[in-house]
Each structure stands twice: as structure tokens, then as C-alpha cells.
Image: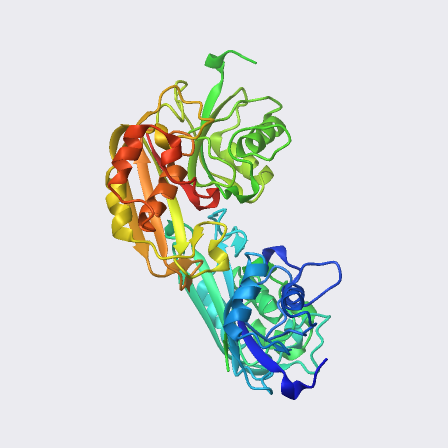
Length: 261
Length: 261
């Protein structure tokens, strides 16, 4: 290890299909995004570098845009790093951009906002091309009830009722600046049009608790299925009790979509 | 086995993601679409049935719409068959529709036309979400040259130059009624927009030779890369020599898209 002031600090914008990974965070005996990145950086530079991500996505969760950073003594340019990383990473993990960033930059703490989107497909219809990337629903969902329920979650709240038991955050208060629920009747897929409806729940906040988006998605689906009246969301929030909210929605429907600094 | 005239004949419309399969045709020790269907029908009815498909897609090739048919002594309705099949098939193979069909119906011989689409993505850009479903191209392609080259293939020709060596067809003459080459600058993907260009080559014919679409796609890419002048396509056709055409494009970019009866 060399002193930080002689090292360069590189910011990466990443995209990945999370289906085949045990999530972002490095683990023994499991393929992870962070693990692959650190292994490839070691191969390129001969040094061990810690790669820090803007969010620790769970197993199966995808990223349209994840931001990460690492320090290195190598004097390879960011552009050369990007090419060398992409030449060595599996095809479902990709560096989309690489730039030098200030020494003090932190992908997680410096984010002004992050947007995650959760996809629900089907409502009675099905396409094989959506099963990796959405929660397939057999029944209809009342979109108005979902929108009304979502409304109660906007703002600064104690989200203990939507927090996974293993969450390592020091406090459970988070601020959701917006929840957008949009609908499509057909889905664009690789230039084809699939005759399957889609509901996209996009949630923007400065930071999230563990499983927060998936627990909100599961609860909004309960509202959409009329298992939970929208106004009950207020009580669920106030109770600060994970048992009262809906189940954790499956990981494949979740995309880390955008990070603003 | 019971006499055909006491059996019902069921037509299935299927969709599948071919990535994890060794193709349509049943094989020992390999997961295939036909193999899965026959196994599940045996499980449901207790009878061995032969499932005939409209096209024998290769390993890795996808189907937005494949048509298949089988005979059975079971008096389950087509709708119940569809539900029982879907409850037992893996999530990347799906029966989209099931109906009774006339005794003489043949999914392959009765097709008036079949359309296959081949997808080429990137041209310098890349998305992890396209790698299963398209041929990623690092370089630019001259679309006008590709369209000009395609023009020579339309009509009734001896397609020996575009036929795989293992092709079992009795003769190499096929009639292509249309080749459409369309372009997109961004790709719709599950309600997101990926900033990656796409070229879609759609070929319609009554029937195809083995690897014909992928060999045509490989040759059109050669024209697009200026490795082969468009007018050479005419010579390649006339030479009836597989060595003169381009390489077989990768299977993941190919979709069986539509079958008309």
C-alpha cells in the first residue's frame, strides 16, 4: 500500500445483469460484482484495491447505473482502465465510463439522490423475456390504490417497517423525495413489442435501508390486490414493525437506475 | 398407442428464451424445448407423444412465436393442457396458446410463411441487457450496403452457399419473400431506454435451410463492414459454395418471430 496522495482515484459507472450474482458485496465462495471488479483490478495492476459502490445491491438485483470508485498506484489512464476491465469482466458486468475523481469522492456518501425502479409484469399475461427482469403477477392490480398508498411514503419517515432485519444502517430514518408509478400496456423488448402490461415503481431518495425498495414494492402490491387499504400505509409506517408491511418483492424485478451527485 | 382417429390433436403457440437450451430438437443428455414438452406431456397424460415444431431452432436461438402440435388420447381441454404444461415447464419456456386443430395439420409443412429476425446491437456501444439477445458489434456498419446486399437474396434461389453442412433438407432451393432491415438508435428494454443502437434483419420465407438466417446475417455484416461489396452476393449465390458466404452469426441474436398458416 502506498500513501493516498500519490495514488489516483478512479470513478466507474457500471451496468450489470444481477441474475447470476450473489449481489454487489464481496463474499467468500460466491460470485459478486465487487469481487469480480477487485479481482480484475488485481490482475491489471498487481495491487489489491478496495472498490466502493454507491449501493450494495442484493443477489439478483440489476444495475442500469451503479457508481463505484477505487484508488490505485497504477498510472494507466481511466480510459485504458475501462478497456482493460471490460476485456476481463464477464459479459453481464460492464464499465460504461471511467474518469479520475477528486481524492475525497465517496460514491455512497456523496450521492445527492438515488433512483431504484421496481418492475411488475403480467397481471395475467406472461412473457419468457420478462421473467429475469420483473415480478410476474397473475392477478390484476388496482393502480389507483397503489398510487394512493405510495403517497403516504413520500417525505422523511422512520422506515423501520420496511427495513430488513439484517440492515446495518445506524438509523432507520430516510427521506423519499418521489415515487413515480407508471404503466405500459405493451413492453418494448429489443425492438420487439411484447403484449404484456408493465408497472414501473420508481423511488428516489438520498439513501435507502436494506430491502427498503423491495419491501415497499411488496406492500404496494398488497394495496393493489386490495389486501391492504392504502390508508393503512400510514399506520404501518408509524408502527415501526417489519411484520406489518408486505412481503419482500423478488430481487429480479429491481434495478438501480440513476445516481445524482 | 391408440388409432389416430380417436385421438385429439392439439396446436400450441410457444415462446422461449433459448439461451439455456441445446435447441428445439430432442437429444440425449441435453435440455431441449421438444424434450421438455414431451416429458411434461408424459407426466400429465401418462402417454408418450411426439411434439412436432414449425421450425427446429438451434441451440441458443429464441422464439417469440413457435408453433407445435401433438396427438393425445387424453380428453383434457386445450386450455387445461396449457395450464398444466405451464405449471410444469421451466419459466423460460411458455405455452402462450393451445387449441384443437384438424387431424391433418402439420406445423412445418402447413406454414405459408415464417419470419425470423436477427438482432445486431452496439456498433461501438454495449449494454449488458442486450448480450443474451443480440450480436454485439464493435464497429460501425454501413446500413445502405447491407440493404443493397439483402436485395440480391430476395426471391427463389438455390441457397447452397448459405446452408450448413449438416442440413437435412432434400433440396437447397428456397424462396425469400422479403428482407426488412430496420434501425433504432435507442432500444426499449422493459420500460427503460438503452442508449445502444440496434439493427434488426427480418427475413420471411416459406421455409429455411439449416443456419440460413444466421449465414445470411453474417454475410450482410460483411457487406456492412465493407469486407464484401453488395454486388458480390449475386456471385456467392450462383457459386453454391458455403465457403464464399460470411460466417454463421452467433445464435443468441436469432428470434423465430412469426408463423403464418
